[in-house]
Length: 253
Ligand SMILES: [Ca+2]
Image (cartoon, rainbow, N blue to C red; front, top):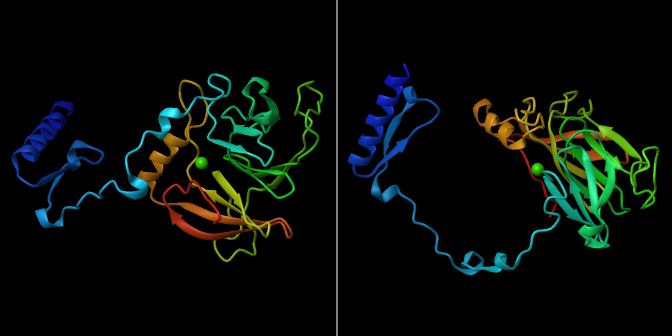
């Protein structure tokens, strides 16, 4: 069977090269190889690298921060005071006070997998955890120590929601499967994404969740991502839009 599949792919590749203006598409298996003819006039013209797209070397001046200190942070953000926060794949939220990575320490440990985060106007940290849903870390006292004797472990973690409220016009009562990213509007309304209805895939080597792997699986399943809102005044969670392929980042303009 493998030999037959390899033969089909080889023939298709050769046809793709031999047939002028042909576009070779290899989806998921050799049995589904198709060749589509794309007329010359229908082919896109590449956009010129002008204006903001002009080639530059600005990133050559970038330097690596916290290299080897933090593990798999999907989100890094800074607060108004210049402190830098890392959402680590181990469940830890760590921070570099004043942006000094040498002083890097634990902010709190949510025990899950924090993916996205944003501060509200009072300095509380809203966090999307892919298994737990939407959480809030109260500002608390910096440097406070808890039972574990580690700075930050006494900071209060407030669970906000892992379920769409019954008042929602879309998908009322449904579970939030994969809270991913969050932003907060000036009026305090919290907007966040629920990427997929799939269970999160894990790396076999580490057992840790993998957003990359799960987003690939979403391509096979179809678009199940959603945009939600959480109103801190009423504790109401609503679905605003659905049908996105792995809804990931969200930003309020
Ligand atoms: Ca994300």
